[in-house]
Figure 1 (spheres, rainbow, N blue to C red):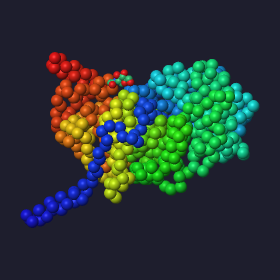
Figure 2: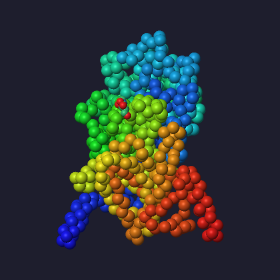
Figure 3: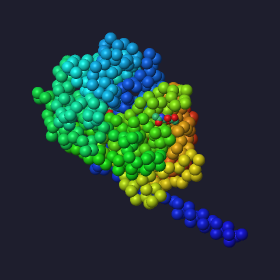
Figure 4: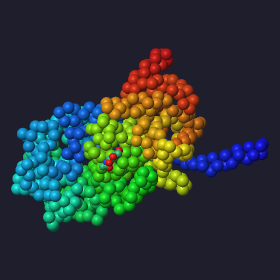
Length: 575
Ligand SMILES: *[C@@H]1O[C@H](CO)[C@@H](O)[C@H](O)[C@H]1NC(C)=O
Ligand SMILES: *[C@@H]1O[C@H](CO)[C@@H](O)[C@H](O)[C@H]1NC(C)=O
């Protein structure tokens, strides 16, 4: 028995050693070359399909659920998330000032061309009143109808643009997209041949020139207010950035330059277009994201070389409207967190994750659908919350740099990502992702990140914020930083008040194990999300060096004010 017992023990030790997987990382303690610029607080945004706007804003009554979910992110990041109001349906819409309903109406006199006619929907002033319910200052890229080409096209597009300029009072009109995915316009009969990047460029500039003269200039807005080309695919088309530059798109007209950014679209996977099948495990292989996006990486470089920003205004895990069991799971939330970090490191200025009312890839379900009699939050939203808190943590100075994690062995190949976040030029946080799929019902392994934070961070407390759920396949029960979001009100609740702290050793080293299908943001010095108004001064109070301490069960705002009282007391005592 004795022998056997020893034998069992040593097998256990051996096998746990064999399974102990880890990586050692030494991020630079000040911003390294190759890090992103300051990440725009509105960076991690959303696209909304124009025909579905009222599902998100509400019609006659405000959809307070959507508004609260957007407000949470604005509170975290410091500014509201950037919204792109665009998609196929922008090219079906005409503006009529006498249409005052909180819904779009069908045009019974539709005469325009197109498989779905370019004048089939009518919107009016209520469209912008509804949009104005979103958080104050929300930057909006508005998609204009370029498909419409009847003789009165100029008046039509001017009316729509004027409606947008006049109608957005609480939110902020940021730019115009002119036409959605023109590279597909031969297929949907919006145009007949010849239709190429060259003809598109001419027609784009025709519209920009009229819109500047008649709408932007009178409103004291600049001519550089437009984002071309908003293509569905750049690969093998005549709409690539270099081609459009050759076509003269940057030259503008009459001394006016119209370009403010290069706008492209992508999806990780598109049902009916991507030839191979897709499983949740495939989505969670993060190497596949790099492979899928490789061509866009080249476009980003080409864009930045022209001196203009690159914006990814339509993106998602699965298009056109998601895939149940994949895009609506916690695994998709981990994919989203990684995608935002990856996009930031490429120098992409803004990313909009596309939403429709019926998409299983929308970050939230704004109206009841799919067997639920209420609205609800999808796991993806929790990744937006994580990114917003990470960005807000740097108060406008957050920069992201990717750490090399390619050498993690076969078991974790493609499943491990690490990013360093800098604030005010110094190492501030680490985003650590373990996207190895472990389902809720399965036993889960873990992967350890051994991180050398440098002697500047010796003996410092590092606060761990978890993006977690029971498993990669979970659709409910997700938390970020101990918070969950209510399916009716959109407000945050404290689901887990534990404050997780590890203390760096005398050389600045910490060891952070992360369960399979989980991510952690490790922030040096304070818990993420509590410092926008207050950064606790570490010299004021000596915190427990225990790995885990408990924080009072309270909302973030309450916790912040409790911290304010504690620090105020500490200051009184110090005096
Ligand atoms: C969305 O997911 C639900 C299950 O939650 C499913 O019934 C529905 O068919 C899905 N919709 C689409 C368009 O895939
Ligand atoms: C955040 O930045 C603004 C200016 O960029 C500054 O006025 C403010 O004090 C900063 N807040 C904190 C908490 O550092």
